[in-house]
Amino acid sequence: MDFSRQKRAPVYEALKAFEKKRVVPFDVPGHKRGRGNPELVQLLGEQCVKLDVNSMKPLDNLCHPVSVIREAEELTADAFGAEHAFLMVGGTTSAVQSMILSTCKPGQEIILPRNVHKSAINALVLCGAVPVYVEPKTEPRIGIALGVEPEMMKKTMEAHPNAAAVLVNNPTYYGICSDLKALTELAHSYGMKMLVDEAHGTHLYFGENLPVNAMQAGADMSAISMHKSGGSLTQSSILLTNSGMNADYVRQIINLTQTTSASYLLISSLDISRRNLALRGKESFAKVVQMAEYARAEINQIGGYYAYGTELVNGCSVYDYDVTKLSIYTQGIGLTGIEVYELLRDEYDIQIEFGDIGNILAYISIGDRIRDIERLVNALADIKRLYEKEQLPMISGDYIQPEVIVSPQEAFYSEKKLVPIEQSVGEICAEFIMCYPPGIPILAPGERITGDIVEYILYAKEKGCSLQGTEDLEANDLNVLVR
Picture 1: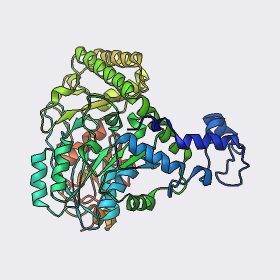
Picture 2: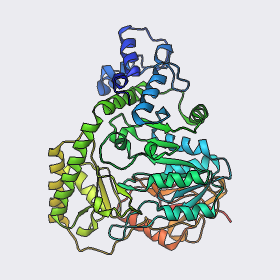
Picture 3: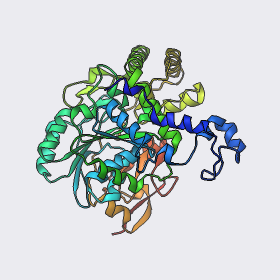
């Protein structure tokens, strides 16, 4: 990384220069620097709406960058150790879908674990590629899916040698890391592209003694949620490509779905955040690790909870662990993760990232403080004291491995009918249903519905999980294929 160059923030600099010119706007957006919408100014501030501008020559164009945005992308590639970087304003969903659309054509197979984010399976609906799921093991104590084992991946590749690409999520929402380097070498040995959903891994590029990042591992493409641990504005992300990818073609793919009216608030936040991480990321993420480890130790002293970490590492299904993740198993106090999540929000004014059936995740990043960690620990101790129940047998959805009957695209666009979820066993699902967050589908289009899956959906619903993806907003009915 060229530290002297990383002091630049070309988009930010161009916006500041443009602001000084006091240009009279006869272009969009129609609020005209906020003058036409005073309540918006009151909410967001004058400085913010003044910089909500349209693409123009001094500010470049995200769809076809030739000046300041191009330079910002070059600086981003340098900071992340990539061949090329694309600034994304459609979130990491857009980046994940661009990876798949860049490497997979209709009818081609892509190998991936089933616990991918819904954006990956949505991409299969769009491009017509066919999923081949490699089954991950499950951690029996806490019920979460673990990493992809190279031996299991090799067997899957041997059975599907013509697959176009492999996609893995690394680290997972819970902090689990696969042996990314071994998986990448395997993929390349079979002539497959290696794609990494690295939504939760921005910090792996800047912190010390953290798991290997995708570019270091030699992956072909990686999707980065800069707005998660990187500090940029929500919806701003990065797509990285390594040598061997045609960056000009990838840009064309991105432009199939990305807006032509890119927000300069998002673009500049990526530019500024990249500079911040390049110059101060090492120090910042050392503090994040320190806070997460402190919180883990304190929570495990409460009893009942299990804040897991590097003790899970076994060199195979858990090749490494991202210690910045504060993932906590809650069923030891007889409460599901979603129940603890809601108690923290409603009774203690603490908003954590998510709660699922068995776990909660408190996201710790560069903006956190020790006193906030202590407030969380104290609240969890209080919840145990006031709300603890008898521990029930653990129910988890991560172990369910689906039977794919038809491709996601075929199922999504086929004739379908709505049936009550309780009556859907044996049918083929024609839509998504998932708890959000984390956004990992319980069912995806084209999969056989089983009794175990229905039981899990009803349990999640009873416990208060937000079920999304269905046409029926109440998630009482499910679309299935008409046969």
